[in-house]
Length: 209
Image (cartoon, rainbow, N blue to C red; front, top):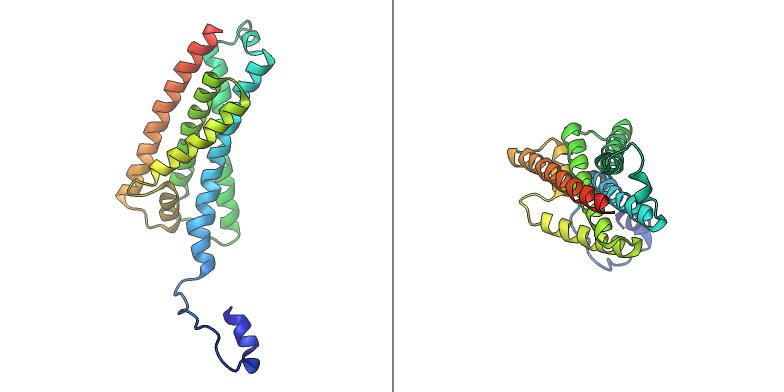
């Protein structure tokens, strides 16, 4: 808007609307750290949970889940393989994105906790997706409920002193506090508990099959 008014200033007889004061910080800077980086870290975790749910529902739909149990692979190993493979996607993607934006000139102050946060969120959402898949078994119902549950989870997370996007932004900017690192540790603890719970529930469900 400012650039356009400057270009047409000779033709303007009056100012149609007054412009607000120019911000002190760069819009690109704000966009990168408050929107782009959190999106690049959190979205892979959401996708990991969705993929994990699909791997279970597809086995159930195809009737191949019982066949896995007649192989030398145990039920626990089946669950571990499906969950760990999808969990690993999120931190790998987050690390790749951070490396890419770093190459393009965006400084990331504290990348390791960001990657750990991506892994923790992916573990929580994968556990959620697997649990819903084993409970409802059909892809349509599972994906619908998974999407609604994810919105609820992140809605509740927004009530924390720092939401996950804020945590990512602070770590990237180098302005993390003890609370920021404490929340990352809390997410990791919830992730471990969620993984163990989902593993236990999935193993029981598969054994019942």
